[in-house]
Image (cartoon, rainbow, N blue to C red; front, top):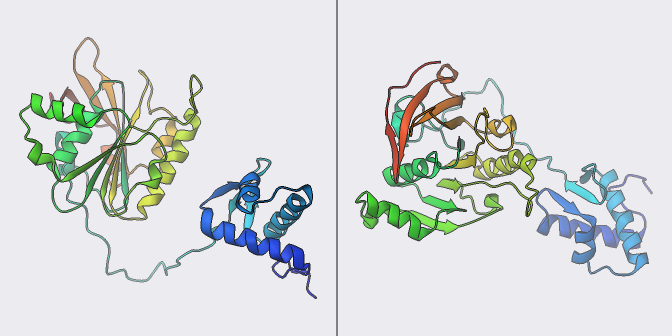
Length: 302
């Protein structure tokens, strides 16, 4: 018989590998732990755990899983790729999304299905106000899902009342409180708001390094359709939000929001614009309002 790891000679291990394969198909999207396999297969004895470890080793040899570099943690290999000829004409390129943005940004920047827009701003710089303005002004047929980890529904409705916005004008927006794993509820084809994304970890040890990976998973969930408006916190004097410059990687438009010196006003800065890089460095002074941003200058080039 062949030594090819795809064809198992030992009937016992073949049975274990079949169960592992079922676990991978039904429960795994990305990484998994050996302990999760034990639990899913209801393995308790030392002999059965040894058989599972051997089965895992054979799955690795067969190329179905790969090591993550962390003991006991593996990842499912994703080798499905939809290839296209680079010279083939594409007749169904998606048109830009008709999205209204704060401070007239839509007149300068076109957004496309699958894009991610990131607002990285100081506390009280108007990140939520910008998101609420986008939600209010865009009622063109796309579903709008507002996921909040800070503002409650009552707080948003109170803001609306302060500026005489009728609640009926917000009926096109779905709202939910959410604190983590946003990628699980991002809806492809919809406009999704994440206000705001916090680092993983508990207590006094937040894992800021995890934020770029969290953004990647959110962007991946879009699968080339819809839009994500994502807010993250930023420290004073920093060029990017919590998580560092890598938080820019998946953003098609990356905006920072900073306090103007000796003023109650703020600066909005275009740090990254994939479709129009010449805009990078442009900035505008603004003042946050309960349900939007009020411009206090023109867009000024760097």
